[in-house]
Amino acid sequence: MTFTLTTPLYYVNDRPHLGSAYTTLACDALARFERLRGNPVMFITGCDEHGQKIQRTAEAAGLSPQAHCDAVSAQFQELWQRWQISNDRMIRTTDPRHRSLVEQFFARVQAHGDIIEGRQQGWYCVACEEFKDDPHEVQDPECSIHRRPLEWRDELNLFFRLSRYQAAIEALIVQEGFIQPASRRKEVENFVAQGLRDFSISRVNLPWGIPVPGHAGHTFYVWFDALLGYLTALLEPGDEADLATALSRGWPAHVHVIGKDILRFHAVYWPAMLLSAGLEPPKRVYGHGFLTREGQKMGKSLGNVLDPVALLDRCGRDALRWYLLRDIAFGDDGDFQQQRLVDLVNNDLANTIGNLLNRTSSMARRWFDGAVPPAGATRAGDHPLAQAATGARDSVIASLERLDFQSAAQAALQLAITANGFLNERAPWSRIKQEGASTGVGEDLYAVLESARLVALLIAPLVPDLSGRMLEQLGQSPLTSGVPKGLLSGADDPAASLDVPWLERLCWGGLDPGQLLPEPQPVMARLELDAPL
Image (cartoon, rainbow, N blue to C red; front, side, top):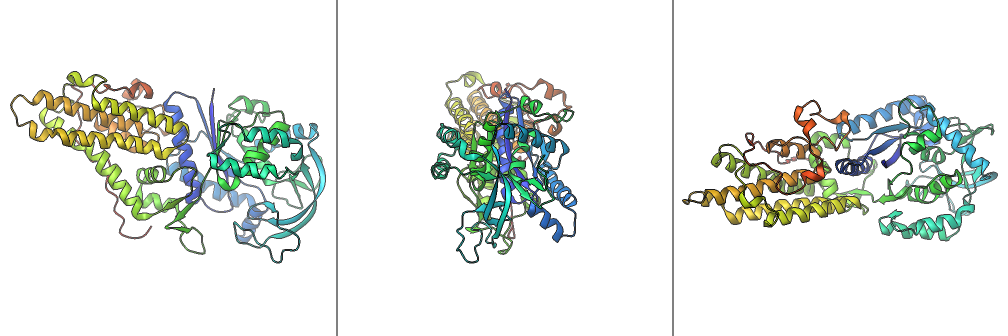
């Protein structure tokens, strides 16, 4: 069965920011992991391109809404290419096929009796594209998220009868694993316990959106429209705009990965809409935390927004991927700290992992004819490093299954730390001078090289570029199962066609004695930042 995972469909009122990159990076690591262990994957990302906020932003820039969307969506696509994001689909809600699927979905919901007319009154945040619960008498109310004035709205809308799904949603949200991390589930339970109210799914006098069939003057509310992008994205490029066809391509989604601020839409509104249309809800909704910078919330007014393009230029993919996945517990809020970034990259990747491989490979080449030394009994599974590697493998797999990227990174790193400790304890640079010590030294170097090979394989979902350089330095074939063909730099390499499945390669003893070792090159340069990011 296809493993379908999604980022949010990013709202194109502005260019991509680090928060968007963080979510997409996490999904990329998960998608790579699932592909590596042999699962067919449908990794969806995209852009949400309708709504009043976009219309106003475009007008302020002197552009048509479509021209604005085209420009910003292109920035997202370019950024994901630079980050080597392995998405299978990039949906835009201005895609003509999306409009057709929205209409088909709406017809199902309407036929089920879940669409009614009603009057919507309340304070509205254009930035959030939602009504707030602020009472009438509040003077000069503002959005608690965007710190902008709310607008009073009083209009006739179409409503989705969410209240009919109180019992169904209550049963769904208490299912083990549906809302993750566990801390998020309580938030949703509290919201649902207050009683679900019907919510507006249309706006009037808003031309930038999808018209509601049979209801002149109404366009679909941006959230009703955007959530359905997950279904449109399932269509193959040559497919007709048919809802049943889309569903057959990989629904239900295994996981929606989102920011915690849109948890309610994905864990309550979206499942109810799907149930109304006779469809299965997603299997899991994962709401991660927000990023701050040096202890402060990022914002244009503070001038401390981190540009993901500039960060790539200064730091490179490996450094940023490792830092964001290794340092921040996914699900919690995280604080981006420049010195912490430098320290982790240099200590973990350059010193611990990179130096382990470089110095061991250099000794093996010098003393064993430029090749992997004879393994002897070291190739057996009872070697201390073999046992450490098995534990690291199990921990990495279990951690990635629950989207615990931090623990996965730490488990792989710990194997490198253990191998470094073993190397220092055995001190082959001293023992090689002793008569008759060559066999034992060779076996020790084999064990450390084999540990480095396994570290390279374990970090592949997190830092694929570094993983590839490590495998190359060990004379190993590249991993070809972690990414779509379009991102395979070595796809035409004959060695790539001989690639052994990742899980099989994670077994101890896979490094062949006598395998020639290339001239050692540093696999990870130290990160030097002489000015603030």
